[in-house]
Length: 370
Image 1 (tube, rainbow, N blue to C red):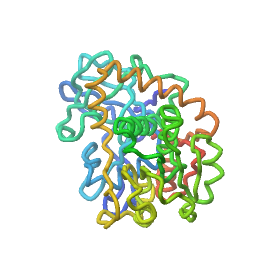
Image 2 (cartoon, rainbow, N blue to C red):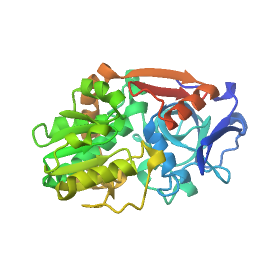
Image 3 (cartoon, rainbow, N blue to C red):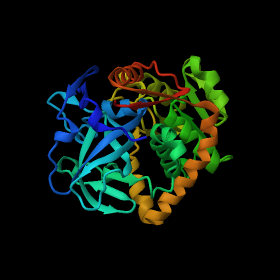
């Protein structure tokens, strides 16, 4: 349900760019007092999902320009999230108050967009500060025209759809490259939601091509095994059980320097490709490792989107990804419980718990700003 922006205090949630554990709420102009310029619209943030993926956005905020999407005072950043927003007021003839959209949002009460390329599928934010970031993140999808949208599945969409989508694209990339002749795909942070989406897509697309090995903490082994989308689950302290001579691809969701070194050292020339994706172990990152075997290559989802949009066309791309997403939902129903909360205290708690690794992998967190 859309939130009423006029009935709540307007704020931005800010985090320290040099210390992600430092955060505060900053009051901003009330939504009804904002003066819109031509072609602008004010979107009230209804709700958003929050996962370890959002922490990755913050960790790579400078390196990959995630801080550029939503400007903040010097030294502070606004962490991007995926969620739903409603047009409250509009100075663009193509956007009408009450329309709802899904897309990239700040952890704030509202977002002002400079709408362009408006059509039945949605619009693009043409704000000047977003002109140098990948346009993939600047597109907002109209719920009325989105083939993957289901009003009963908004929570799952906010929490999981971007992560599942990343997993879909990684598998598509690996398949396009013949899995680099590997017979095993090793996935770190196997309990993370992006990893689960990746493993599901591997099973759906290449059930017999590669063994899918999930790496996780010992406390999460039973949970990951219960998912049924990994052939084998290995605790981080049992890496010696991974065959050292099997040609393998490493999909790294953790970004843990010690773990990465251990994988490369164990596999050596048997490691055919290191696909670096996330930073769930953000406090143990290293960007200057000297590793045996292939060096990590950062996976850039928007680049893959651009390729497949060209190959399949916009409509074909949306249909394929929507079909894959819908096929994933029955598995989601088996393991994820949605936890909904609202207000400042809840927002801060979810953020800090996720940052500190205290979030329950069995839960999906949805937060309404007010």
